[in-house]
Length: 219
Image (cartoon, rainbow, N blue to C red; front, side, top):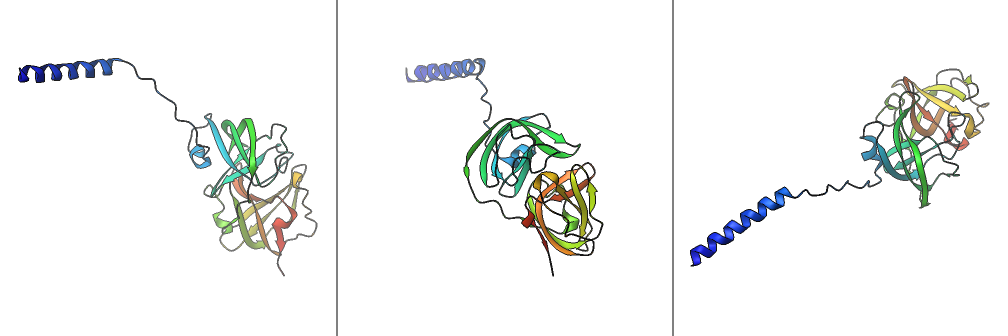
């Protein structure tokens, strides 16, 4: 009798296992955790949600666009539009939108919703050599120190640009019109410390200051 009960239990367990396999289990989509690092790994066209601290303000890079940049720890990304929100540096924002390339190269988000969650300290700029401003730094705040090795070029109506080199290779510094930064005191040969958004335009990488104090001329 005991043996028959054991065989019956074994048969029932096998039947239940078959039924369980036959019943489709709904697949739950993994919710976005707001990670900028995770979003940057997704294919273009993917809908993502990212959370970070604003490192530039609405319209700072006007007339290119009316967007702003955000950063989470060591990783950042650019948001192509503010959707009429007046985003300020230091605000924590959550953005949902589609990954795209702006101006052929810069990984960005075309937003469908923007929500301000609060405020936080702006991330500290990461010190980097001029020759190392690259894909590895794109999206985050950086700080470079070197010599202006080119003329200050007027790139109307977008702003002004020049090159800075610390001996490791030049990188472009672009002063966007929307920042209102005055470049009249800058000239070739000056040693400078510059911080700003590490971006890319077409085939070159650049540093884009946000405030006048982001550019400091050394004695």
